[in-house]
Image 1 (tube, rainbow, N blue to C red):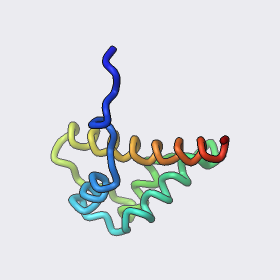
Image 2: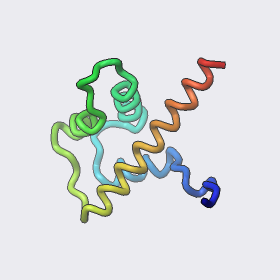
Image 3: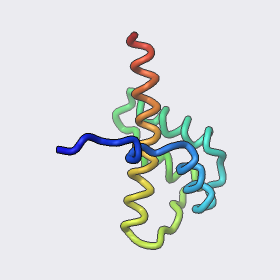
Length: 93
């Protein structure tokens, strides 16, 4: 198996561009905080995608096709969960 390179990581700029492209009504830091709070909550009924749905006033953006929707969800999830992992690692140290 090939080692993962830095090119596979998603940076804040890419996520900001996606939010702008799909006319997100909230700034990146608010979306990220909501999503991170949702995935770290002890509430077993929490749904990160439901939180993203709420960000767009209960209406998800329309993507060109399913591939683009999957890429968007993957990029956003990867970027925010990476931030959570870094924060948890800092607290554990």
